[in-house]
Image 1 (cartoon, rainbow, N blue to C red):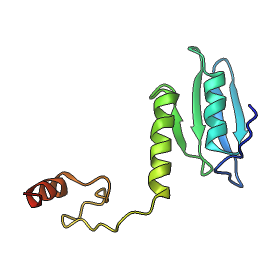
Image 2 (tube, helix red, strand yellow):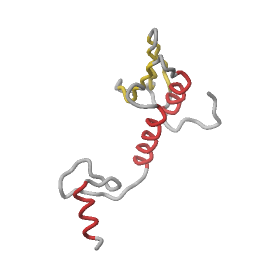
Image 3 (cartoon, one colour):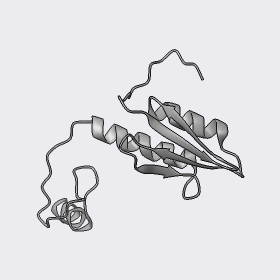
Image 4 (cartoon, rainbow, N blue to C red):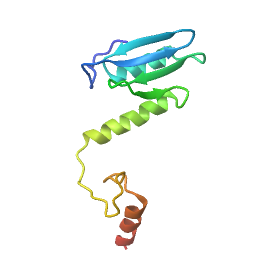
Length: 115
């Protein structure tokens, strides 16, 4: 697939798409966009596709999620990382509580403080 845009993310090590059907095929990609395009082009009902990050961890498996749903989630996470946000320290020591995705206790506090 050719595009007039350069990939927004490139790495020294390749992001790998693993295609499993009658054999095991590995395709190196230079970006997640390229890997997503390969999965979309090659995925069939008989094929299992996986995306492996540059550290060797499997970040997508077609048996667990559709590539379209994974792409939406990946783009949201990428956008979230690229946006500068206010520093937020959760008073309840919840490590998953961040500025744009508060924990339940912080959400309740925000609602109570708005009245």
